[in-house]
Every structure is written in C-alpha cells, then in structure tokens.
Amino acid sequence: MVAGAVAGILEHCVMYPVDCVKTRMQSLQPDPAARYRNVLEALWRIIRTEGLWRPMRGLNVTATGAGPAHALYFACYEKLKKTLSDVIHPGGNSHIANGAAGCVATLLHDAAMNPVEVVKQRMQMYNSPYHRVTDCVRAVWQNEGAGAFYRSYTTQLTMNVPFQAIHFMTYEFLQEHFNPQRRYNPSSHVLSGACAGAVAAAATTPLDVCKTLLNTQESLALNSNITGHITGMASAFRTVYQVGGVTAYFRGVQARVIYQIPSTAIAWSVYEFFKYLITKRQEERRASK
Image (cartoon, rainbow, N blue to C red; front, side, top):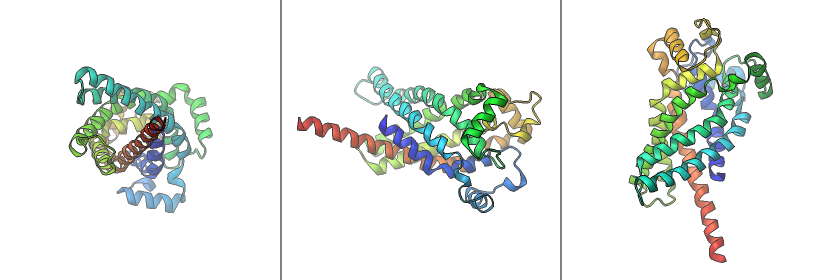
C-alpha cells in the first residue's frame, strides 16, 4: 500500500500538465482560443496566455486522492493476483488472474478517485470559474447535488475495467519476456509499463471522452441535450456523436497516449522500486534477528 500510494502520487503529479491538455483537447465544442493542434502547442499557449501555473490548477486535490486510491489499487491487485493464480495456474502466472485482479482493483480505485476527477477536470477546463478546490466542490454540491461527484462512475468503470485488464495483462505478459525471473529490473519495469499504458490508452479513448463530458458537463455540448444534464454512459455517447460525429470519440487520443506512456512507466517503476526496497529491509531485519 505504501509503494502504491507513492507511485500514484508521483505518477499524477509529474504528468499533470499533460492531463490538463488532454481534458481540454477532449472538449466537444472548444472556445476558439482553446483549439490546439498538439500537446506541446497547447502547453505553450496555456502558459503564455493564462500563466505559468495554470496547467497545474487542481493538482492538490489530485495528489490527495491519488495516494489512498493507488494504495487500495495495488494492494488489491497483488492479493487477488496471487490468490487467483494459485487457483487457476498453481505455481505459475495466469493472464486471466492478472486481468481479473486488475478489474476488481479498479472498482476500489475509481470509488476513491471519481469525485477527485470531477473537481480536477472542471478546474482544468478553459475559462473555468474555479480557482480553488473548495469553490468547485461547493458549487457542484449546491447546484447539482452530491450525485454529481459520481455521475461518471459507471462510465469510468466501463472505461477503466477494460483499460486495467488490458494494462495488467500486457504488463505481466511483457514481464514474462523481459524479466522472467521477476527480479527488480528498472529497465524492464519502465518498458513494460510504457507499452502497457500506450496500448490500453489508445483502445479506451472513446470511453474517456464520454467520461470527460460527464464530469465537466460542458455547456456548449449541453445545449444539444434536452434533459439539461448528461447522465449516464448512453446519454454521453449519444451527445458526443450528435456534436462531433464518429471522430469526436477520438478527441485527445494523442494527448491521452502521450500522457499514459510515461505515466504508467513512472507508476510501475516507482511501485516496483519501493516494493523491492521495503521487502529488502524486511528481509534484512528478519536475518538480523
């Protein structure tokens, strides 16, 4: 849990500016001043026109939520992976067990992170009226109710369950080839994590676009929705198609993949390092006794 918490906080903090760009590039009908060609241009324009620290707005709430969310995530994954592997493939590694463990771990992770995602993405949007986390939380609670913090939960799970299944299965598969002895090997953890994140990110981009819409309730997109609020995955999918057609489902795919490659590489390398460090110290203490 300690290793997972540190990995989660570092992953989200280091890559947060790119995450801000991804959120904006997924906007269905962006303001003319917030139309970007690529990630680097977007970062440059945000910093030049809105200030140096604008891409970091909302980082504090993300870091606060990422710690416990990733602690639950990795602890659940490790426990279930071992338990299920012992049942499905005793003494070996089971890809089915890896995928199933990743799916269950996602339920806990997303339950902790979904409210954080809502606040974070509203603060990341262009011309966001929120400058502080407390202002955003208060406004959402008063105007839309507590349910707004979990409006995208089912979509988040629909996206993250296949994402994490693909992610963990790809990571464990690559580890079998690059690191068959399963020792601490930084280069193999970085490479496996980066590849796993890229594959999973590209495959689940349409669901991420719908999740962003549900979280932000983008005003221009809401004009095309007669209910006033977009609630549920089916409504989000329909609205995305009405506003931008099929291509809208892949808005921000470049930013999403660019975000996930170093993000998952950082998460796995940091997680494996701290797991190795903690385990080594425990072994040394037992040996000294």
